[in-house]
Amino acid sequence: MRGKFSIILMVGLVVSLCSLTTLAQVEEQKAKLFSVDDYAVKPSMVDEFFTLMKEMIPICAKHKFPYHWYTYGTPDYHCLIVWPVENYADIDKMYKAFDELWEKAGKEQLQDLTNRFATTYEYFHSSMFYMIPELCYTPESPRLKPGEGNFISFDICYVQPGKGKELEEINKEWVVLSREKNVPTGFNLFEGDIGTDMPVVVFSEKGKDAADFFSQNAKNLELWGEKGRELWKKTEAICRKIETKTAWFLPDLSYIPEEK
Image (cartoon, rainbow, N blue to C red; front, side):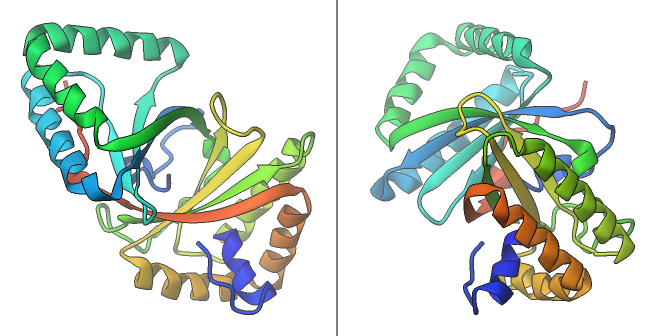
């Protein structure tokens, strides 16, 4: 989103968890907590990694594992597994649910799967993020239909200490500007918590694919105009570092239990 103003400001430099797909629409003004497991997959073991994940899904479905996850793949061989949780206490409940799953499915079967899974990645890192609804933007008439936005672009802004409130005010201006200009692309905002290089904020947007995303982004830049460029400059001024990354949502490797 905002990082794409670098295309203008830095002479053509092209850089790039929206959309948690089904969670992309902000339904209530309450911060939502997500646990993110980042796996650095061995390039030679990508197929095995995904095969083992697929094996896990029917096991969870059969035994009605109550927690769901969304899976994302990145171009640099990372796999992000995102778990929506109610609060930090809910994480303990999730671990308990895993213990119960091992009892129901059989410890030998899951231990074998776990051992094979461990050979497919170099390391993993866990972190927590809050999605802040009042700093997210959902257009009145979204350009993309549900299920169309599987390409994700997110700008990671490592904020200078003590500048969090200032960035929050800038983000509120982004929301107002997007509504005024009727920008058809929504965006979500996530604040990093435990396990992140705090303070850090992540902005995410989605597209049908990379070509669709960047094509629409060029149109969004025109809509945001000079005001948008000013807001991005303000953001750059209070950040220690800014990174832009892309990912694909992988529905076949995600687990969403049936509603009760």
